[in-house]
Amino acid sequence: MNSIAHQFGTRPYETNDNSRNSLFLAVIMLGEGFHNNHHRFPNSARFALQRKQLDLGYGILVVLEKLGLIRDMKIAGPERGLNNLMKRALVRVPVAAPQR
Ligand SMILES: [Zn+2]
Image (cartoon, rainbow, N blue to C red; front, side, top):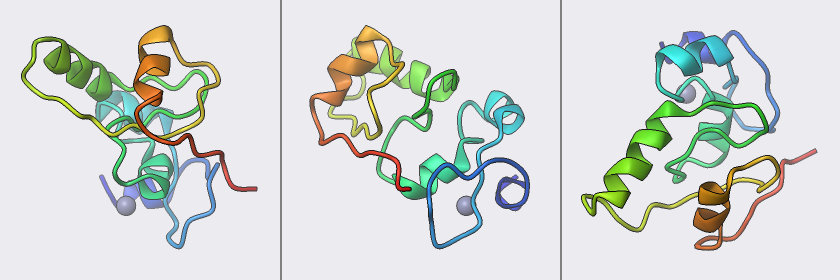
């Protein structure tokens, strides 16, 4: 899967690799298909960073956090298009803008 995520898709961020974002891979890999986002912000628990990106893996992490099973998730990315829960999570770490 990792090698596919370096061959097909979009590159919203400049990275030193050939990582790419693929909605198809993101759906079947619970968000990890936003691989370019992941390489740009490797410490972020959330891979979805742009509007209309669905990150089911992060959704599971939010539920685990609500249950008190995990805490102190690191979240990176622009706040545009995020729901209130994600906006609240963003205040914990600095917001990074896409590189142009
Ligand atoms: Zn990779």
